[in-house]
Amino acid sequence: MADQRVYPAGQRENLKNHLIQLYRGIEGDIAKNCSDYEITLSQKSKINVCAFRSFQKKMDAELENKMIEEGLSTTHNLIPHVLYSLNKMIVNLSGEAYGVETNPAPYVHPADANRSKAQRRLGLFGGTESENSPSIMVTLDRSMLAKPDIFSKLLTGGMNIARINCAHDDVHVWTALIEQLKMAEENIGCKDTCKIYMDLAGPKIRIGELAKEKTDLTITVDRANENSQYGYLVCKSHTLSHNDLSFLLTAANCEDFTYIDENTSIRFKDTRGKNRILTVVHIVNSSCLMVKLNKTASFNEHTKLICNKEQWTLTNFEEVPAAIVLKRDDVLRIYKSDRYLGMPARGNLPASIGISLPKALYNVRLGDNIYMDDGKISGKVIRIEKDFIETKILTPLSEGAKVKAGKGMNLPDSFVYLNVPALTESDITTLAFIHEKADIIGLSFVHRPQDLKKLADYLESLTGRSIGIVAKIETKESIRHLTNIIFEGLDFKHFGIMIARGDLAVELGYSKLARAQQDILDLCRAAHLPVIWATGVLEKMTKKGIPARTELTDVFAGAKADCIMLNKGQYIADSVIFIKKIMAIKNEDIVRRNSRDLFLPL
Image 1: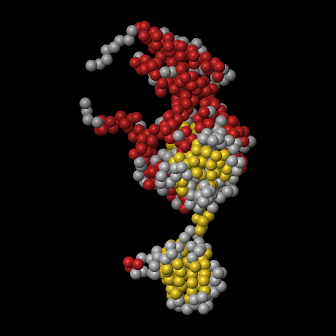
Image 2 (image 1 turned 180 degrees about the vertical axis):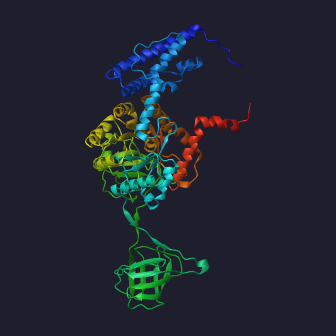
Image 3 (image 1 turned 90 degrees about the vertical axis):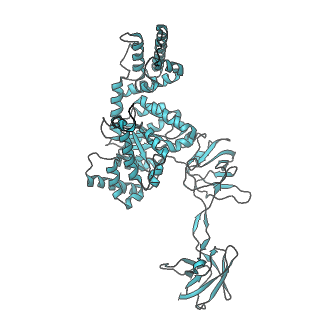
């Protein structure tokens, strides 16, 4: 049976008075925080942000439930036009013509909010004002230069924006990628030009290089089929023009093999202590022998080959980074040096690494969290010395994770921004190129509005083009200062926000990411700013060709943003097409039209 409750007039009056009180309180906050703003469209957005932040502080669940019971607007719906919606609710409750509105000039009408958002999206990303599907941004990669048809596939599939990450490669590679993209546009006759987005590298903190270790050489012989492996044994001075056999061994202390005949046996103990024999099958020349091995053997630089009265050691083994594997309760020493070469634990010394930006460790305190490789390894600081700090590893728990040079490091508790500016010297040297070639520039690791101001000052000296700016929100500090970052950005001609969920998840903790990304979306809705939904979108599909189930819901969530960013992968063109299909299904008209086929009639 339908709910027949009738709310008494007194309850409606109480709700109206509560909303009036809320309205007046928000007006007071605006007067304190936004009184200097001129009444332009940009400043109206700032005023609405002030109104929304004030509304968030004053709103409670009980009041929202009463609003819903009276058929009034929900919190979500009023975000882009807070004071206008509150005033309309008061009008609807009281029946009066004007509610409490005394000076409507600064307040945002829903039509103005929609128009402002559409214009800013159009100015930053291109397209048309009427578009209701997000733009698709694709990260370009140098490997694409070897298969130039990929650019046409991406463009025809639906890519609107091409991203180049300036943390990788150099000007020559970036130029080649842009040229291939432009060539593909000409070949297929694109109606709309694909925007070029370039990320500044920023002060990414990375694990330093690891020391090199010489690896064992294992030659496997299939005894079941009575096969042998054939290879070359050469003197150190010998240069082999080509190696058409299975292996190559180099004798370090050998001048020549003039005294060796075919069928001579060369004996040795391999690294496992197994007795093995190399048999000479052909003398290529005085410094090169073709030999065969009848049983599996492993060699290293300590292996000694014995032939008659001669004894040779081996050299020229491949060097690979030292293997550092960490698990729970291990200790890792991090040196305040970008030249230190990482080493595995030895004796009483823990495993150790260097860091690309030593200044990032200057404000580290005991108990601070440290994350590496997108959170695969985590720990807490347990010791601080002049030249290094030590961390106790918390995860992974048992199997262990391998430390890799160049992987990222996050220190969310350590006030990194005090010593490491968002705009680095390297970034400044690439600004002229980016300003000339790109339509949009992404500022990585924004912490405070001053970071945007510094970038704007540099760009001001580069005359000739207006370039869009995107603030990448990927640190705990940027979340804290997001309102002021938005206020600074609203003064730019073209500005947007990127939710860089990879680093943000590590900085905040995975449990807080979902709430944080929604809060960012809400604040940007209040500011009428375009948002980029980045990192991890369709990652499995892009790399493997098949999406994970959770990726489908993530794409739907990303549709609330104005642009979805995809990273590189073998199946990137398929992912672009897949997103376009999902967006078509999400389109309201298509869903409404197809619903008759999805559900049985009542």
